[in-house]
Amino acid sequence: MRKTKILIFILLLFSSSDFSFSSSKEGAILVEKLNCLACHDFSQKRTGPSFAEIAKKYGTSEKAVEKVAKIIINPPSFMPPFKIPISQAKEVAKYILEEGAKYNEVQEKKIYDEYIDLEMQSH
Image 1 (cartoon, one colour):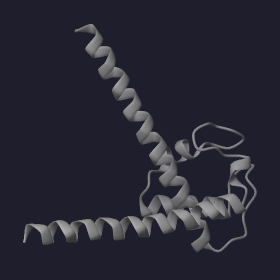
Image 2 (cartoon, helix red, strand yellow):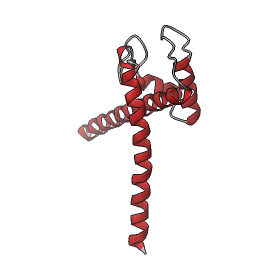
Image 3 (tube, rainbow, N blue to C red):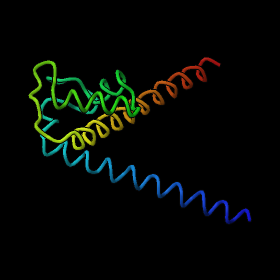
Image 4 (spheres, rainbow, N blue to C red):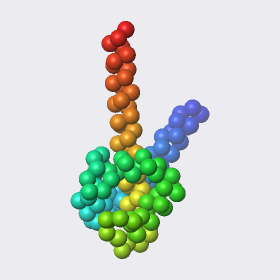
């Protein structure tokens, strides 16, 4: 029984991550095709904000994806509007927010690790 539960858990884990991966993969392809990285970067501000800054501002919820998708289609500033379907804009937004959040998470872990290292040195 325990082995069955573990097997089901592993299958669910991989099936849900496959879905997320394919969605991110489509977003990554669109980010490249739309040349987003000409003005944006994953971690550093360029002409436009980094993916990390965007994720920090909006988060990764479905509402955040919708908001960023609308900004992609009808931006408020220097960014050119992209004439793409809302479904593609959502894929781009999801990718930007997911990748930005991943970068932010790694940075937070580095900060915590540095703090722990400093704390260990003082004892």
